[in-house]
Image: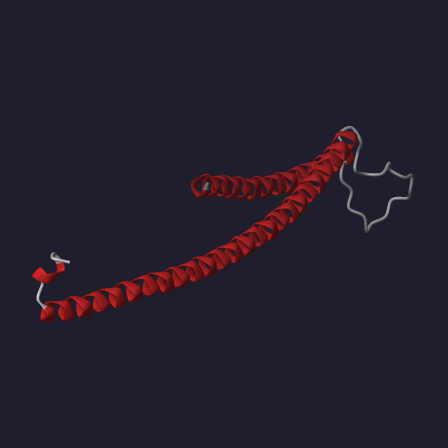
Length: 164
């Protein structure tokens, strides 16, 4: 034990005190590290739970929006089909009535002083012109509405392309 006798006795006390202090510090550091890891693990699990909940809510929102879009598209298709059917009925009616007179055949009746007489072809031509003007106004209104629909579709498609 010649080697240990070189260190004086009072130094052994300080070495023992410093060793106990270092052991206490190391133990506290390790316990603190374990405690921080537990807190961090709890935080990660909370963040994961919140993230999973948010993902679920997002998926549900997407499902609802898709269902609303499908409903809206179905209504738009139905409205378009009804419009096309009505247009076809008008065209059919127009083509069948082009050669037919709007006026009934003249009935043989006695002349009266209270009647105003028009020539049948002149009156028929005037009625056709009035109907044609009405059709042109209806077609112009429909064309304006279709331009609005086309603009809305272009805007929707543009917004979709920006969002993706």
